[in-house]
Amino acid sequence: MTITDEDCLAETLAFNEHYAATAGRSARAETPDAARMAALRHNRLGGDTPPVRLPQGRDRVTADGVRARVLVPDQVDGVYLHLHGGGWAFGSADGQDERLWRLAEQARVAVVSVDYRLAPENPFPAGPDDCESAARWLVEHAAAEFGTERLLIGGESAGAHLSVVTLLRLRDRHGITGAFRAANLLFGPYDLSMTPSQRSFGSRGLLSNTDTLRRTINQFTPEMGAERRRDPEVSPLFADLSGLPPARIVVGTEDPLLDDSLFLAARWRAAGAPVQLDVVAGAMHGFTLFPLTVTERELRREQDFLAAA
Image (cartoon, rainbow, N blue to C red; front, side, top):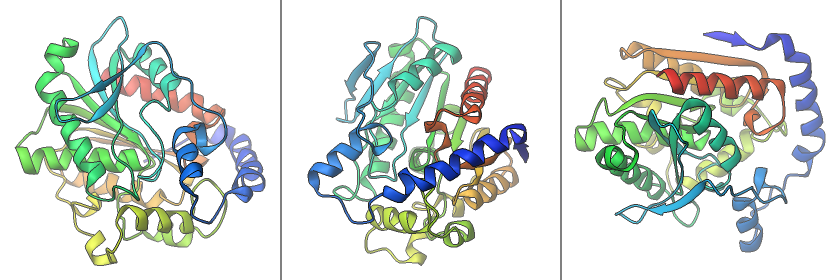
C-alpha cells in the first residue's frame, strides 16, 4: 500500500470541509421525484450543470441492445471498457466526455463507456447484465471495431464494483480469462453487506456516507438481507478472485469505502495477481470529480497505468 499526496493534504482537507459545509449540507435526504431523478442522473455531480457532450463521442448500441458512448483517438493501442459511477442509480455514459476524451488521447485507448440500466427501476441484476453483455461484445468485436485485442476495464465507485463483477461473470459464465489485461478500480464498494468503514463513517457530508450508502445499496439490491448481499455475485469481495488481471485500486483516506479497497487489494494479491493500492491522503469519495491537485495527479497516474498495462 502506498499513501500518496501527503504534500497537498492541507488543500484536500480544506476542500472537504468546504464541501461538507455547502454541497454536503444541502444534499436532499428524501427520495427525489421523477423530474429531479432525471436531472440528478444526467447533470454533472448531480447539480444543475449538464455535462459537455463532445463531438468526438459517438452513441452506439451493441447487438444485444446495450447503449454505449464511444470515443476513439487518432492512435489506438487498446480499448478501455469504462463503467460509470453513481450508486447504481445515477450517472450516464455521456456524463464524462471531457475526462474520458483526455484519457483516450493520453493513454492511446478507445473508450467504450456503458449506459447500463439504473436502479431503482432496474435493480440487480439488470446493470451487471448490461455490463457483462458489453464486455462480451468487446471481446468478440474489438479487433474488427478498433483494430486491437488489448482490452482494459475499470470505473469509479459503483462502476468499480461492476467492473469486478463483470470480470467474474466472464470467467465463471463464459470461461473467458485473460481477455482484459488490467482493471482500473477507483473507490468502489465491494461488500454490499457493508464493511466496517462503511458502517462507522457516520453522517459527514462528503458526497457519500453511511446513510447514502445504505440507501443506494437498498435501491440496487431491494429485499436482500445482509447474508444474501454477501453472495459473491453481489459482493465481489467474497468471490474467488483467481484468474483476474493485474489491478490498480485507488481510494481516499476520508472515503467510507476505504475498507472495501484495502480488503479487496489484499484478497486480489492473495489470489495471485499483481495489484497496486494507492491510498490518497485526505481524499473523500469521488474526489476525482473536483478541481483539486490530487485529482490532476490521479488522472495522470490513471493515464500512465492504462497506457502501460
